[in-house]
Length: 462
Image (cartoon, rainbow, N blue to C red; front, side, top):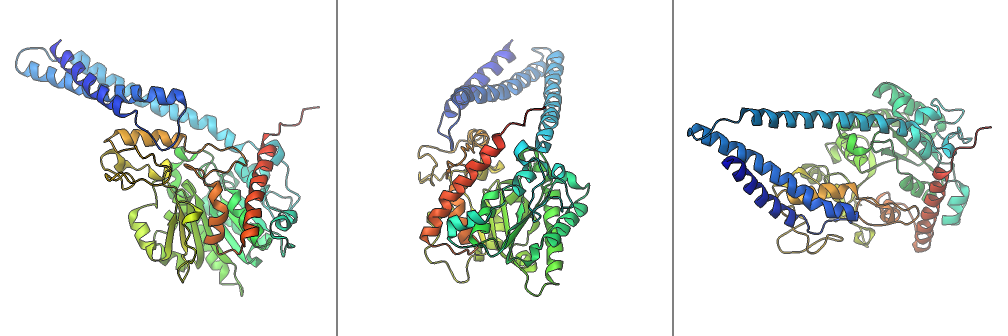
């Protein structure tokens, strides 16, 4: 009884303190129910984590002094509970994967039919079928901009038709085969004859953001191509284990494109784009920074919302001489250095996906300094508490993106409001004030149209 009382007292004391500290402001809004339950959940877990070892330790000490018996049943029961929790976690994760994987395969009715445009993957002339593209691949190739989009923004006629290539993870069983299909598609569509070729690393589901590609297609008046190769069908938080194979895919694609460039008298400018997990993947494919970018003759790279920040401080240090990091377009210098920065990091100060790192458990991060200074959208009263801040930012990541089609925000992990200006600057695309304004309006209209298509129900069966 004494050991139980000691454990309970310690648990209540620590749990209460943790619960009180857990009520502090966080990076992004949470649902009311989550905000209400969080202190109790974190405080309860902290209390149990302290109570159990204190109770067990005191029981062992009392037994050693001959004042009690070793609670063998309690120890065995506690270990059993831990084992059950671990098994339940593994089983639950497997069930989530089995439920979400078919969603990544299922095509939206509006994007299910092969495109009539021969310059995109999935068309009748393509080496891959719509089913092999997966849901996100079908959306990507089905969103290519047209002549009317280019005229609406630039006021000029197109000079070429843009090319979009996408290879889904289920198009072939190996990385080598998927890259081979991508190269075949790039050659078939004449992608290497365009002035720009954008290589995008998709997120875990295969999501390849169409917005930066839209910007490139419009501002180059169609004289560009883009390519993405999927490596999974699951959300990024369930795809972290696939970063190595995804990076291998990117590297092999870059190697293949480099070899192709040697055969071209006028090769296109090569551009890199990665967002969220895609940024982490692409950065992992060029770990040498400028050395690797030189090797592949990369003109510019734009990496957006990298999980944990700029991959690692060592990687950022490699790029520091020719990189720029911005929270929003307003931070882009009016006069850029000469030569222009080749590596662009777009990272919101208050993006929990960027800020979430293991070091948060034990170390005060640089973005929560003691002097009280805070970046944009970081609450002034937010402070660092050992262990608690880590849990808060972990929950923040679950609510980091609250997307309403066409309502572009520059908040949390939502970068849509920033991409127009930052993409144009990163890729050195010409856009005067009037064109930039029309571009922003048109990008919102394109997203609304896409959302309406995705929402369309399947046609009724006859």
